[in-house]
Image (cartoon, rainbow, N blue to C red; front, side, top):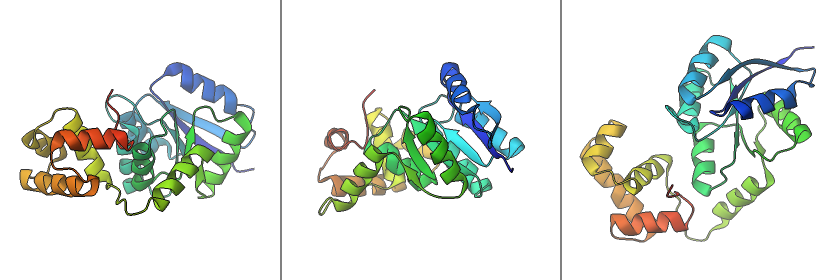
Length: 210
């Protein structure tokens, strides 16, 4: 029997240990490694070549979405299954746009998780029911043009009080490009300034203020 090689990525040791325990009884799974942040996940994927990566989203050093982008750019054959406590529209869209195969919540049961991993290994999309419902709602929202992954990134930096110059430096783009993105954000959200954009972004679930 060919094993599904798994890499577990989460910044909490107790979560990684719990997942390892949950999956240990599955004869067709082989847990090849664990990573505590996105940067380590990218490095270990390069070295261990897992079939499926179980990826948390909110982590220090490098978040899950950035790690997904890096991994999919170098190894498109690796399937990435997001496993997180966050189910906001923005988190879901960013992860899927980055290349995630599926999106599950951490309250997923053992058997459901095992089925999802097997489906992901076959390249099939797997979404937790609440996540699927949110995506359907997004698609059906009349006349609401959603923000792109880059626009979400900029809106989050604005929410953290970053200036256009700081955003440009952080994202390695010009200030003119930042201004253009901001204009698109204002247009899509139906607002005219940064403060209103952040307020509306929070209301729609695009961003959360920690």
